[in-house]
Structure formats: structure tokens, C-alpha cells
Image (cartoon, rainbow, N blue to C red):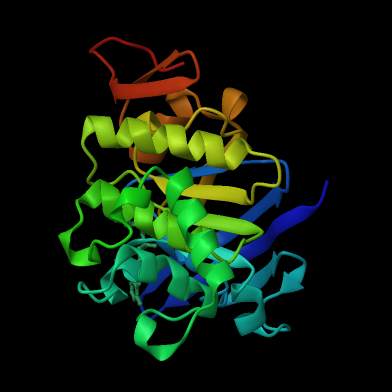
Length: 267
Ligand SMILES: Nc1ncnc2c1ncn2[C@@H]1O[C@H](COP(=O)(O)OP(=O)(O)OP(=O)(O)O)[C@@H](O)[C@H]1O
């Protein structure tokens, strides 16, 4: 077992605001994590630190064996796949799906900057096939539905064969069918032999893909609980995270949460 992420007392401070406070977190290479928390909890900030895009103000962050602040972040970033809305916003709407994915091989957004070889294209098409969107290869990014965009961004994040894959709210904005399709793809890709370690951010327990093993609950920049899903994801812990009394149900490997009925005791 190898430690992929090790944060020790990480804080990220901005003028007048603590984005993260004293976050300690360890992720091993046989684990798949969901980071859950309400709006503004610090989830994206945490992904920025873990994705080597942001340095902690204090504490230490070791990612894939490299300590932030002591390593060349550009090299480290090539080992990490990151998909989120910040990346989607930088993609030109006229770029084709194939180019969005293949351009990751050179870590640029906008194909015009680089040329690609046949191997890159073959790999891009293989990944698009695994995510069920190969038929969209020649469509432009701007014409895709939200679900198709999310898949394209995940395909892009996988293009460099990363050791660590960070998915920031992959289920946001998807309809029921698209969400269920995406969860199935995430289950398959995260449990395949040789799969990268996956960390996924979400607001909803309904979006936890089967096969995910651990959960980190975040509120106001602080860790509420972190550990194996079975023991950690309780109605009480979720209620503390979201600031209300919640009922939590589990059917098979899927979860559902709602406000607790009057008189219900969170367990
Ligand atoms: N540079 C900054 N200066 C001050 N506050 C900031 C800065 N960047 C982010 N914040 C605040 O820090 C908090 C955490 O932001 P972050 O984007 O990490 O939360 P999040 O959990 O990802 O939220 P959401 O679920 O809404 O996407 C938010 O309240 C945000 O407004």
C-alpha cells in the first residue's frame, strides 16, 4: 500500500477568511474517496491543494510522494487528472470533443498550440469509448449537453494516464438518467485494474458511486469526519456536516438522505 495524499494540519487562509483549517487527511492507493460538504465548505479549495494548484498557508501536503513547496509542481501536475468547472470554462466552445481530450496530452486547452500523433488519437478514442461518448468525437464542446460535457472532461483528465484522478462535482447539473450512467462509468473506471486513485467531490450522498470506499465530510473548512464509508457516513455525521437533522438510508451500495421527520432521532 502506498500513500497517495498526506495532508498534515493544512490551512489555507485568505484575507479575512480561512478556506481550510487544520485539515489532516491520508489517502492510500487502494482507496476511492468521496468528499462531501455543503456549498462553501472548502471542497474545491481542498482539490486545488491536492491537485498541486494551490499551496497551503500552513501545514504540509505530500501528493504522490512529493511535498508541495519542495517539488516542481508542473511535473507533479502531469501525474494528476483534474476535472471540474474551472477547466470547462477554459475550453473554447468551438473545440471538438476529440481535441478537448487529445490536447490534454500536452496539458493545453486549445488544440491549435500543438500537434498530436496517432497514438494520442488512438488513446483518446479508446477513453471516449470507455466513457460511452466515442460517437461525439467530432462534435464541438459548446454543443454538448451537461452530461456529455462532464464525460468529455473526465476523458480529458484520463488522457495522461494519471496516478490520481480528481473529479470536482461530476454529477452536478445532470438529469437522473445521465447521473446514473455517470455513476456506472465511475464505478467501472475506478475499480478497473490499474485504475488511478479517484477522489470525487459532491454535495449529495445519492451521487456516491458503488465501489467508493471512503468519505471525508467537510464543513466550514474543517474535517467533520473522515474514514471508511460504512462506519463514517452516518445520519449524525451527515447532519453535523450539513447543519440539519437528517435521515440516511442505504439500499445496496447506494445512499439517500433527507431532512429527518419531526421526532426522528439521528443515528
Ligand atoms: N480568494 C478567496 N478569498 C476569500 N474567500 C474565498 C476565496 N476563494 C474562495 N473563498 C471562499 O472560501 C469558501 C470555500 O470555497 P470553495 O470553493 O472551496 O467551497 P466549495 O465547498 O467547493 O463550495 P461549492 O460547493 O459551493 O462549490 C467559500 O465561502 C468561498 O466564497
